[in-house]
Length: 294
Image (cartoon, rainbow, N blue to C red; front, side, top):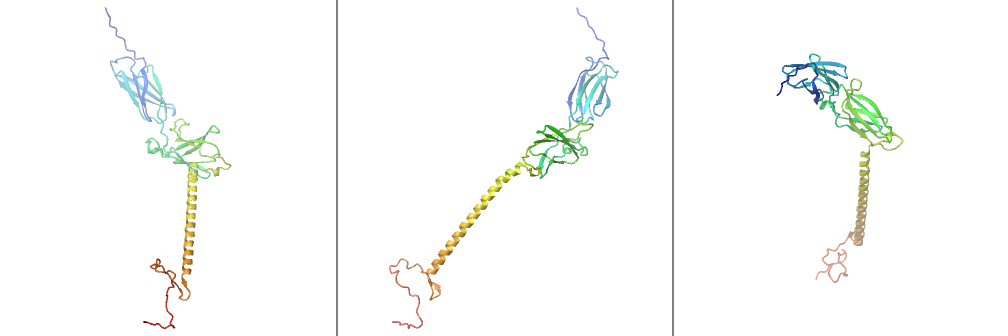
């Protein structure tokens, strides 16, 4: 024996299993199930979106006969906070949830350039990769001092650089740059963080320098000094050798100089091996001595 029972649909029940499927920067995909299984007619839902930051409300109408309903909420703001309520159009019991949209990305290529008495923070414009970002919104910069364990708000700018002064010697700092927060600091971009730990110890911040140029100088200066010393020693050796050659040639020339002829006399080298090397060399004849030819 069996009996068939058909339940009467209750339109006062709330939608079931309301949840977020996907959340982006400017949209959110939500899904829920009908108050009861297998609706036999179209059901009209009211989707209310409350902006918890701006304190505004929007209501959308969704009609569907499916047991599972999926809907995309558009025109949201990056980093926003929303309260979503879904209920039947007859103002039945409601299902609700909270969603947070994805904030704007962090600025890319954040770097530090060290000057004499200050540093400069540089980064790429967010507008290059975020179509929802306007340069007029600007950026805000924060600094964390690890030694004092305090965070300070340095200011905001619409440029892609920021000057930071009055840094203390021996302190390590962390700088963050992000899209400027809106509506009381509730809608912010993701921060880009950079650690600045290149400060040394000293009495004056003007003596602070980056560690990397110092390391390069420590290598380059000794190499240049050794090179100059080597060149100097080479020049001295060449000069001394030149002086020795010049002195040897002068002494050799003086030993073969004839004051009577007024010139130096050198052997051709053909008679270097003859036995009568000590025989006097006939160098010429005097004008007052007659020449006799046999």
